[in-house]
Image (cartoon, helix red, strand yellow):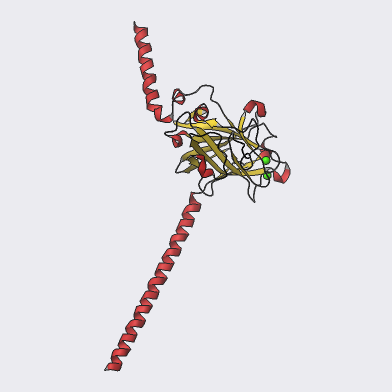
Length: 280
Ligand SMILES: [Ca+2]
Ligand SMILES: [Ca+2]
């Protein structure tokens, strides 16, 4: 009887081990499936805007929808478009706008009068209404060699706001509050051969104004960008970004975004007062 008891216990122990193994296998498979789902979900979220073969595209993520649009050559040079950021390096490049140059301009910034601080008030001068949504409008001018090197990819575009100006750091998370960012894998493909040379303009970027809710007009805005990868390296001259100042600013752009309602109400008040004066 004792032997039968030992055998029964041994059989139960083996079954338990087998069950434990099955449970471990199930957990392992579940973890693998979860990881695969995460990878698929992450890559599914990534958006590639192709401005080589198309004229526009959008990237939608947690920060809103940004619009990227190919633009025809413009009869302008650096002095006319007045850039706020120039970056240049080969085969990749990154940088952000700042007036700070101590101990050195960060990353691949080209220091000088065309790389400098911006305030949110500056950015608000570019506000445009597209299909009922408010956007900040920027111009990108790429400068790439001809032939097989004419393509370049924009791999990251981020905006930070801070009460401090002229920041210099290579830890971009130190640039303040992150307001807008590409998701991992988001990118915009461009081909300089569609336009001619520097100063002609290549792309408009429309950044959702809603991403800047709560920003003070006096806050500084840092725009970080990264270009170039194995498929479309950065080469040749500098890439430069400029504000596209709206000649007819929206009434709301005189106010911070959180003051939008106040602006609407104040506009209504002025209209009512004008009507009252007309009727007198
Ligand atoms: Ca290139
Ligand atoms: Ca270049």
